[in-house]
Image (cartoon, rainbow, N blue to C red; front, side, top):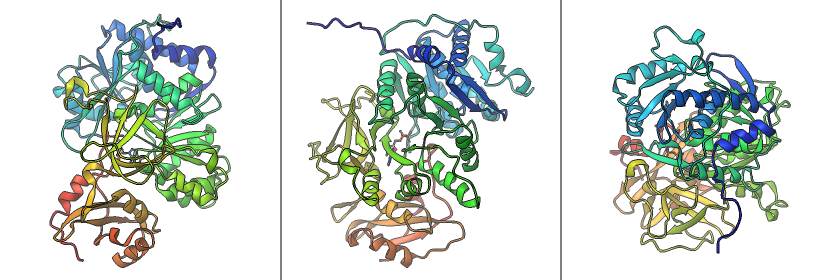
Length: 542
Ligand code: ADP
C-alpha cells in the first residue's frame, strides 16, 4: 500500500525560491574579477537568476542541454548554478586549473552549447576556441565596460539586462541531471560525474544537519572551496536551503585576502583544502602584531586531502575554531563522512579530542560504507583492519557520463572508492591510502598517509610524500620525499629520528629525499605517479 503524502519532486529551483522569499535580506558578498567587492542578497540574486534563466531559454537552451562555466567563486557563478539547473539544463563546471587539453576534452565530451567564463580566463578561452566544436556562444562574466575589445564574447550583464526578473520554474522528474563535474584523475581522461536534482537536495539536507556541517541561517560562510570543483562541496545549495550568508572570495585565495574577508564579513564558517589554511596561517605568521580578535570563525571544514594535525591544533588553540575533518570525492557529491565529536568525546582531554578529529570523519545518514579484502569479502568495522572502501547511497554515483569506464557498481550496488580505510564501530573512517599508492612491505601494508602526517608534524617540514620503492627482500619499502619550510635545512637522520618516536620501527622510511616542490593535480592532490616516475631509479640506502 502506498502512503498518501505529496510526491512533489525535489528540485533545485525550490531552493532559490525559498531563500528569496524567507531570507530576502541575507547577503551574498562577492569579490569580483574586476576588483571591487559587490553586495547583493538572496532576493536580488533570485531576480538575476530568473533573468539568466530567461536568457538561456531565449538562446535556445533546452532541458538536458549542457552549459559550461570556467569561473571563480563569485555571485555570477552562483547565479549560473541556480539558473541553468532551474530550467532543467545541466551546468558543467570546468576546473580552469586543468591542462588546456583536459579542458577542451571536457567541454567537447560534455557537448556544452554555451561557455560562460571569467575575464581572467579570456586568454585560455581564446587559445581553446578553435577546438571547442560544440560551443555556439561565448559569454564573458562581466559588463560591457569591463569587456576588453579583443575578447570575442558577449557580456553577461548585457545578456541579463533586457530579461524579466521573474520566472515560473518548470517542474520535472527529480532524477533529472542538474550538474556535471569531471574528476581530474591522475591517469587517463577526466570522467564526468552527473548529479541529479534529487541527489543535490538530499545532500543539502545533510549539510544542514547538526551532525553534518550544522549550516544554518546563523552562518556567514566564507566559501573558499571552488564552485568549479564538486559543486563547492554542495554549499551554494545548502546555503539557500537554510538562508546562510555567502561570502565569495573571487580570484583572491591568498591568506591575506581570505583573512581580511573573513573579518570584514564576520564569517562563522568556512571550508577548504589543507593548502588554503597553510596560506591563511602563513599570513598570520608573516604579520607580526596582526589582530585576530575580529575573526568570528567557529567551524572550518577541511577535506580533499588529509587535514594535518598541526592545522587542527592551531585552529583550536590560537583561534578557538573547531575543525570538521570530512572525506568524500566527486563521485559522492562530495560529502560522505563528517568529523564531529560524539557526546562521549566531549569530556576528553584536548589531545584525545584531536585524535578523533584527525580521523576522516564519521559516516552520515544517507551514506553506507563498507571495507573489503582483495576477494571482496566484507571486513569488520571495529577499527582493527584496513580494506578497500566501498560506498553507496542516494548521492553516490552509479556510473560516469556517457558510460565511460563501464559498470562501476557491483551486484550489491557498491561503488569502489579507490581509497583504503579502517572504519571503527562508531562509523569513524581512517584513510590509510589510495589503493594504487599502497605500500606492501613483506606482505604487510604500510600507510603512506600516516607516514606523511607524521612527517609534516616536524617543524621544518612544509609538505611530505611517501611512495613505495622496490626492495629485494621486502618487495617494497617506503621512501619519504620532503619539501622543507623556507629557511630550514633538515637532514635525513633528524627526520628519521623524529619519525621513530611516532611510527612502528618497520614503517620507518628507508630513505629521505629533499625537493623544492612536489607535483600536484589540478585539485591540489599529490601526484604520486609523477613521483614514482621521478624516483624510479633511486636506490634505497638501507
Ligand atoms: P578528483 O577530481 O581528484 O577525484 P576528488 O575531490 O573527487 O578529486 O578526490 C577525492 C579523493 O580525495 C578521495 O578519494 C581521497 O583519496 C582524497 N580525499 C578526500 N578527502 C580526504 C581526506 N579528508 N583525507 C584524505 N584524503 C582525502
